Amino acid sequence: MKKLLRFVCSLAAAGAVCFTALPLTACAKDSDELVLRVSSWEEYIDLGGWDDDEVIDLESGDIKGVNSMVDDFTEWFNSEESGFDFKIRVEYSTFGTNEDLYNRLNLGDTYDLVCPSDYMIMQLMREGKLIEYSPEFRDETVETNYYINNVSTFISDAFESFGGQNYAAGYMWGTTGLVYNPEKVDTEDVTSWNILRNTKYARQVTIKDNVRDSYFPALGILNAEKLSSGDGDPYALLNDTEDETIDAALQILKEIKENVYSFETDSGKADMITGKVVANYQWSGDAVFIMDEADDDASNPTELWYSVPDECTNLWFDGWVMLKDGINGNEKKQAAAEAFVNFLSRPENAIRNMYYIGYTSAIAGEKVYEYLDWNYGVEDGVPYDVSNFFGEGFEPLIVDADTLEFEENGEINRGRQLFAQYPPQNITERSTIMCDFKDRLAAINQMWIDVRCLDVKDFNPAVVWSVVAIVVLGAAAIVLYKFRYQIFYRRPEKSEEKSEDISK
Image (cartoon, rainbow, N blue to C red; front, side, top):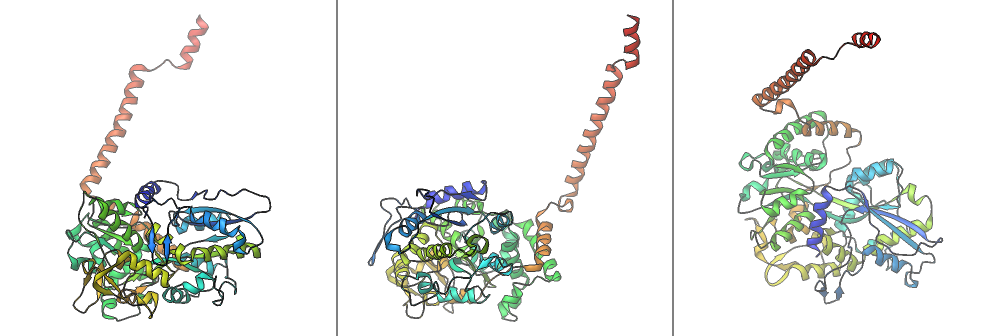
């Protein structure tokens, strides 16, 4: 895995422009080429250039990333092997957030195929900006329809739950939870989202700096008793946007704000690896990255772990959607876009992308299972059931017992990389999709402004009055200086100057 490269890039991206173009293809720009405009997240596809010793040597065949995935797709599509009778050129670009992408679409930027997250897919569907995948793409009898024939039923069911199965093709997915240092954090404290406002860890934990990822744990804390007892619908409780719920979440988030080290987007990775903080609210894919980097850091021998709080976890996913304004009824463009998704869904390509970025592909099947066994399997260990993702025909993996923590009832709520990438059924059963806020977005955003903006009431009164006194004294000093200057250095009035000139 290109860990060091991605780590450096992720740090640089935190201060960079959120939307950058990546010139990944080197095809000649012939006038008869069809241009396919594709956009996805930063560092979210295999860019190739693996080191010589980076080879996934499966029994079914070796896998290695030499060129970028986009270049490989372009070369394949333009070859006789693909069966297409036209040439393409891919313009691949990236965005930093779903909102960046959405704003660019509203400003008139045109793309054919993009990869937003769950709630943004829902919003684009609701606004009529997407087109459906063709019946040919969804035909399971066609062997080369790699997506429909390999996507996990678990993921396809998630898309079907909000009516997106015909509009989106799953790419990566995961949960949200807590990366933590077990030497600094008590195990019982990472079983709840309440650790974010636990004063025992004041200025030692971090939370995400966006309204959705912060609102979710706030609702988890607010509804902890109901969620733990099974009293109430988790989907309804964790998608509640009524005024009183927003107000209650606001107060919880203000308490969290007082307790956390920072609201962060990407810096939490480095803060965990260097030990600046002891727990970090994180997406599962980045949790894998953090644990990998910490394992490779000889100066910090502590193993980091990942926990999913008992109350709930957010089941998130990113998916490929085709934009109506981009495709614009062009059958060739749609065919090329669908071919791109199918190319990424080839099991060997799904493995390349997982290996490169650390997230979990929506693609299942025997080859991906083989890769999982290659990555985590041991001869002597404990069984780890992955059938909730791969299906009932797949046997449990035999994995290192030291990478998992079992409860008395046999459930696993904490673990290391495998646990983060492929959570067991007891975790996925308490996972909930957080949906589009729809007409409540303005109210939610106002709540977030109230959380994140500085409030004079939040400051120590002594500090406030000291600042006010300094400002007043400074202003008085300026006034006095000007007054003294006019008295001692006053220039003659213009009338006096004129009279003097006339007399001369």
